[in-house]
Image (tube, rainbow, N blue to C red; front, side, top):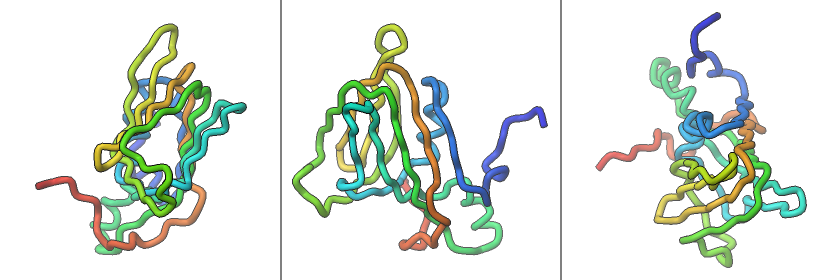
Length: 159
């Protein structure tokens, strides 16, 4: 196979993606768009320089198949791990609210010097998490079997 992979290529298999540069981030961002997670499911291991989120990810890669076969949309629990994190800052998040559920809209990158930069996790409701990183080192791994999306709907961002 010499062409690019498609969503259909991985529709039934758990995802395990690695991003090692800024050009890889749009792919991961598209796959985690509309993932939801409790604020209690994000951790920064400062000594290990690792930030991790346990996400309930909408399975965008399965959407065409679900629509074709008229079956329920799915979510899956995934772990998003960002390595080489030097600093973490957030805005618009009440860290004291243990019941807060956040929705991840996108992941972007602001380059710095010598390969360093900031990875920005943009959240619904004007929240954001800024991770100052030495380099882009990210993995996205599905860790459960898919389950029926509780809402029964695909996320929608139109009017």
